[in-house]
Length: 517
Length: 121
Image (cartoon, rainbow over all chains, first blue to last red):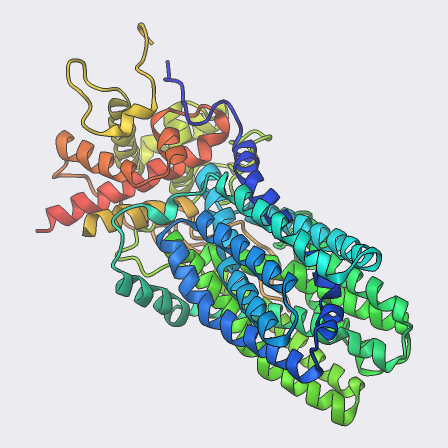
């Protein structure tokens, strides 16, 4: 009888992932609950900000965030990622607190710096936690898109609700109160993150020296073609989203939209983050119609923005574009995490964020200049161009992943047979994964099914065909013999030898077998 | 150090699969196609015996139970608890069967590399 597996506790992998990620979801939802976000510009004018000083504040973000992203990502890879998220929450609380007591520009700039620090600490960290948790509990990163999508839904809902409540609160009381109330909410999010059972994959094995770790992180980002292309895909996706969020309102200004439209316009754009997160779990990216739809949306959606005329059309175009970018962003993030190892995951993911900023800054200056000198319609063509580039990158990234992303600069990577996507825990875990065997089994079939075959878990007809194959294939007979040897050794390792203390903790996770089991 | 890196990297990489889009595709038109990446150990569709070994697995001539157990123990130690439990505890719950297969396959391939490496000294 097989000894009880204590770790699993009878839960399916999906249930284990859900349980482990719950604190992260709660923390992320609370972190995104920024009551002051919708009224920030109003508050800034109250304390003396002008357009120029708002530009200085934007420059503060532009310096702090890219400078700190990769270093904080490397720190997350070398230590506790949940502590990084907690620190980010503390930084948001500090930013809100300093904002609440600000009566002048300089003080608020300090608040902006703390917010920049929080953004940098957050960048890539939550994604890395989700991916490694999914990997630990399911053995595959395939359901990462589902879980990151859910996180985006939660963040989007939190942003939307806080935007409405913040506006109402500021209207009923004062703009300053929204900052005060945001402080304990941010601290609560930090407390939620501390409850997270974070994955340990990035801490397995001997830790590398800091200099070596930094070197490896940058080498992964720059020397591996697959990672480079995927980083660019993630970054350009981010740029498309940011361009619409930052400059989308300019089209409303050009069309003399009433003031009451601006709030719903912003809410619709923010909601696409959540809708995209929901859709990504429903879309099958491997199907051609889905990829055609996404690429087509990216190319066609911004076209109406080049000829401004109808407000509903402009809003619909921007909504479709941000929705497509949201979906592609999650897909691209999954590709990136599939391509790198856990030990450099947060650092590389943060690198994508830095690249986004580096691309966004000159493009934002360009779009601002074009809009000012040639009109917002001409600026729309820049958006069309960037979106079309994104569609092309999307196509190329599919091909490069299909060609076999290796993931990480680890020495002498052992190539092994992989059985493809892990099946959902609710479905029979064996049958959907295994292909039908129309005639005789091949060696590859046997390698893919070896463990189930030796465990006696295969359906009878498959087992029979593999038996038939073994009678005529010396190579597979040797392979199955080696697999049998490994399984026998694992079985011995699972039981401590009688009379001898087990010097290694491997078998400590299992209770000693009872009776004759 | 080398072995630990090998065990850590190889095991994790094999469990990740390294090929997230490994289902076969049939359409090759004007959009890129996600083809199943070829496994170099097996003959391809254009070769005489598709799906069969290109080079037969080599026997482990230098295998001995003590070093094999030590290698597997070290390899298991580098894995997350869930994977280790799946490898040691059989397929309970059954949903862990894919994890178990990947871990066991990775360990077999690691032993193959190590014993093959030692036999070449």
